[in-house]
Length: 393
Image 1: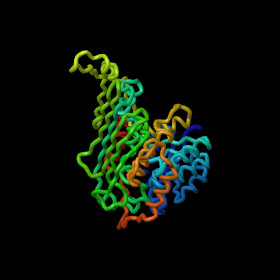
Image 2: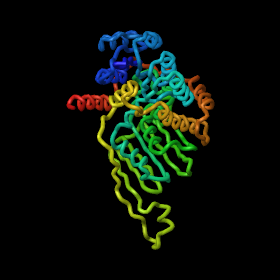
Image 3: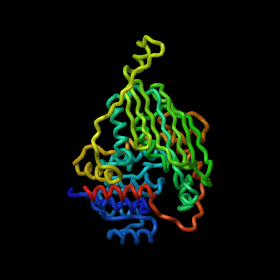
Image 4: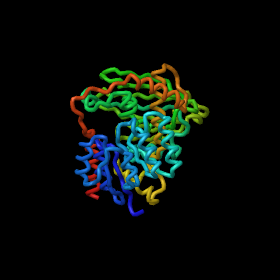
């Protein structure tokens, strides 16, 4: 294979941004776009000079593509991906991978059965401060987990939810902050700590006229007995991005884009037994993992995906199997909050699907005067910065 022929399915704001980035990746070629809207399909196809489809199944049957990038509303991800695999087409999927863990598991299994790649657009994994934290964990600096915490907040107005009929609904999104804004942060959290074994959560709709949650918080228990805390919302300024991973040997703290890694000398279990003075405390020292600079952002994920298809790299940045982690944690929080109980992991997919069917049965599309397709300005700026860095290089 000389290159990878890409189609982009779902060409709202984010899909168009991805189409631009596919064009920038060497050995990738944008060959088709797809939208359920005839007008949108015609407009974007003309913009990029490629064929346009209004039915993703026709695109997948066309033989034009080796891979697709899925950027549709979340509830469509699974069915599109599974159809793609049936046609031998690789899939790079926007977050979240799906809206339920059972769908996500089926996607992963379908990719395996058909010998296709399934990757997730979890581009935060490429950022150096997160890679530094991950390397510290891999190097054993943290050691046996003692405590973990993450807090992530955004601010979304009613105008944001009024921009599309699917926003803020159980049928259209399959959840609120946990399924839309938080997946990247849940992914990094699980990347650093692993999945908990038990989740006790609350979720509520506090400030918005929407069906789904705009705030969620959970107490977590890990397999080794460690505990954690998670909090997310979409009604707070300035935004917070905070992670703490504390272990018997050290600690990792990420605050915004700043990461601090410290090692405890001696490790806590040894200190507790060996200290002779009642007020003595162990020393701490800063640890700096050896992490090289690298390409950052959405384009890095697309380029890595292409290179793995071509056999030029061996591992995806965010394989589908790992994208299940954040999805399972989100499902566990929603299930715990709405059923009013502690949820054991792995999540019972049938139980969660039953809950989701109940919620979707009464879900109503939002009344929207005119849909607005605009990429998140922060993401748009980030993509422009990615392009500028590439241009300058």
